[in-house]
Image (cartoon, rainbow, N blue to C red):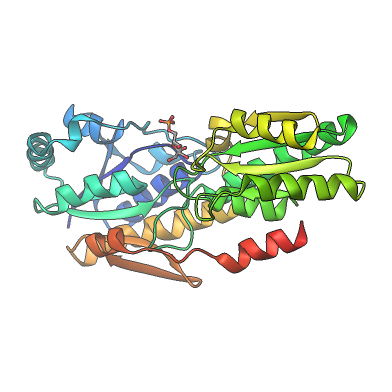
Length: 319
Ligand code: F6P
């Protein structure tokens, strides 16, 4: 394969730039022509395609966001636009595509793969919700951002002897909440994978209060079936402790990527391009049990990862 394209799609994640750098430079070192597609699938449909060289990806390894920009394309969900995308790629002579993104982006990639384009998925999302890989690019940085904020909230929460509910992202996956909750010593962790028991949570907070605990920190994943405001109100009513809500939002998506994310981005994107160089079948690249893995793209999308119940139980025991 001589000419490949690369795009970032869906929600941005710290480390997407590191993945782009690795994809471009691995391609160039294999004497391939590499094209950057701006604004994800949306830009592909508009022909926002430029040739990239070694220096196009200079000074981006440490930067959050994505220099290619990103988008969630509604148009691209329609089969006729997917056909059009293939025609555009053919016009540019692009035979293979590296898609850096999450589940929705990979689904888009699969639509192109089914139309004859070789697509390599590189897992870029803070949510850590792709079943075939243990970790996704951006997750580690997002968890560290949450940990940093937990420390700050702990200070003010202790001073005021309050409870604070911190809502984190993750869509339907509780990994950000679970990992940050364990690492940050949260008193309660609410995630979609575990049935919500508000009564139990209130009892736990009261137990802590009665044991002399000056504050309570509860980490709640956005996918949990109760609004943060409702939860705050119930906690305040039942425990009598002044309670505040902090919805972290997009702060979790920004910032310089951690070393783990730079590493994951570099090795998975480099592997994706090597696979395009050697082989034409579409795949998703990731890590499993510490090993670099590549699965058939369709199969990867069907894979589910077992919820780590032991990690959750440990967090509860230690809180
Ligand atoms: O998929 C990443 C993510 O940040 C989710 O955690 C969150 O639910 C969603 O994107 C927010 O999307 P947007 O930036 O489009 O509001």
